[in-house]
Image (cartoon, rainbow, N blue to C red; front, side, top):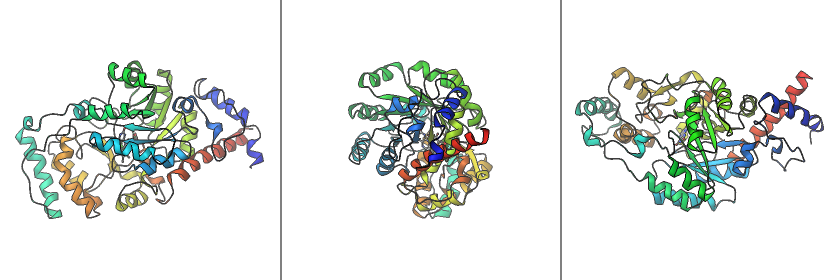
Amino acid sequence: MHEAETVGRRDVLSGLAIAAGASALAAPDLGPPAVGRAAFLRTRLCTLLGIEVPVIQAPMAGVVTPELVAGVGEAGGLGILPGTGLAPEELRQKIRATRALGPRPFGVNPLLHPGIRRPADPASLPQAAVDAAQGVLNRFRERLGLAPRSTPPPALDTRIDEAIEVVIEERVAVFSIGLGKPEPALVHRFRERGVKLIAMAATPADAVELEAAGVDAIVAQGSEAGGHRSTWIKRPSGEEAAIGTLALVPQVAGAVRVPVIAAGGIMDGRGLLAALALGAEGVLMGTRFIATRESGAPRFYKQALIDGDSDRTTLTDAFTGLWARVLRNEYTEAYRASGAAVLPALLQQALASDVTTAAASRGDGSLFPLYAGQGVGLVDDAGRSARDLVQDVAAEARRRLLALRDAVA
Ligand SMILES: Cc1cc2nc3c(=O)[nH]c(=O)nc-3n(C[C@H](O)[C@H](O)[C@H](O)COP(=O)(O)O)c2cc1C
């Protein structure tokens, strides 16, 4: 196929490897590509994780299903199951359900933010902060026909460490960490079991700390990214730890020796190719996967992504207590305008859960957290399968690379 495309492949890739630093693309063995797979994009990351295409699907609670993870794996990428909010036994069931769908490696991800792992006691919250937050939420409740509330949120499930044990016992291939830095004992336990560790950083300094902690690969999360900003200390404003992907990835790639995975605004093969050129050895994509056939996101959420343009995203801490990028809606704007306090990590989410659950059941995206990155303007359909999406991303990266080769030849 595509005879013209294969001509000179070796030269173009060697050139890219040099441009991106010797470590970025392992000396490419450009033997015949696996059928339907982009063997030519094989990087150190692929070898590390046992995958064929350097595309990772981000863990996304409420969105990612075992079928989505399996579909990404079938195409040669790595799918990651979200673990946050799941009781240990639920997580075990999800892991087993995913494994039953195919033999490909996959990952599991909890959010390891200290505020989530060791949450604050709701009884210790200042009543004035609870009253202010409940005051705004009661306006939303009134609109949704819910009873007003004035009490603090319920205590959070603190069994994250038990969930981590489940991941160890089940011998999942990859443990992926968002919003946290693993302690040496934890790294050691995963190492013993041969589980690979991936952790996400939003600044070069945090990336260096993660490497020193012993992780095997680092996700450099640019500020374009949908969902939570990956820091383990909450910054005073959303403007901090908010470096764009284009500026962040080469800095992280220059600061650490382990493979770097670019995240934030990567939606297609152009993004993958750009990330490789910046020194990354793979990409992690979230927003684009929300709008796939196997995604568990409600229909109104997928439609909001198709309709939404990139100018509509904002950073807010009003949904969960931690900074996250979402589509601006009535909830984000009314909460901000109220000036009301936001409770600490995930206690805010627990306080608002009756509102967001009711909004979801009514298909009302105006009071629901529509997590989305700045690439949202590039989402134009929700019907593609995860497998096709990964294959399309790899094929487009290849096409674009060869077109660039022709343009400079
Ligand atoms: C709906 C949604 C949920 C997310 N949930 C998680 C999560 O549970 N754990 C995590 O490490 N990252 C989570 N993220 C962030 C992703 O890991 C990743 O940084 C981001 O999606 C990349 O940017 P993109 O959305 O522009 O592709 C989430 C992102 C989205 C959009």
